Image (cartoon, rainbow, N blue to C red; front, side, top):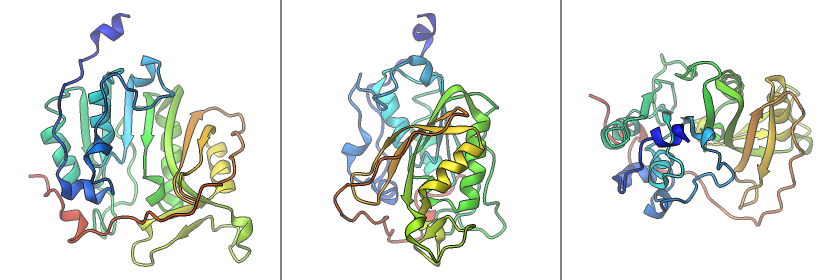
Amino acid sequence: MIADVMRPRAPRTLPLPPLELRELVGLPDSVDWDQRPGEHVFPTLRDPDAYDLILDFGCGCGRIARKLALAGAPVPRQYVGTDLHAGMIKWCNENLQPVMPQYEFVHQNIQNAGLNPGDALPTTLPFPVADDSVSLLVAHSVFTHLTESQAGFYLREARRVLQPGGLMVATFFLFEKRYLPMMQRSQNALYINPVDPSNAVIFDREWLLAALSWRGLRVTAAEPPAIRGFQWQLEIQRDPRPSIALPEDHAPFGRKPPPVPDRPAHLAGGWPT
């Protein structure tokens, strides 16, 4: 009860990111960024302790941060958002952080062909939080843009930072390698863009479950995509027991390709000063 009283109150209004940034993350409509007060952003997570320290991996221009703040049910005690796009982090620090002082937005200067080009940049960096500190790790539309080696690194990082009982909510594109007999045992990801492999990355279901198990993680809940072959949402916990079985994808066919910006994506929002 005392912890709840000490939590900061939610603001009534928050600025909306500019259309240029919203389009870049594929969600231009303002309805995708709003949240009714008292309405849970994560309906299955109603325990206030789940919102003790939220790590938003790939926070973009603050969609989830904004929704959490507006919902206020409950307000996170501490929130850390990371992203490799400098302009998005700049916007969040200028427009969200002053209103929500317990929020922190960190630019992780990682190489990405479209969003943060630079041949000398690293391809991975550790999360900027302590071991066993994160109660909720959010990774929406992140693993769908990581190479196989990057995904392995960040699954290890997830295991490192999650509290015992902590939860990761993440999305993935998944396929079944058994239908592709030409693939080597060492090949577990499909890449659709030869110029920028991070455009969309699709992982073998069995590889992902094994990769989680190797790191002491397990899937505890799975929501199949609304469009056949699109994003699965998985709830993942620190737990050495086997993952639940993933259901079949019986969604209707459709299309939802990534956005194509009018100018170089890394310039959107301006660079930090």
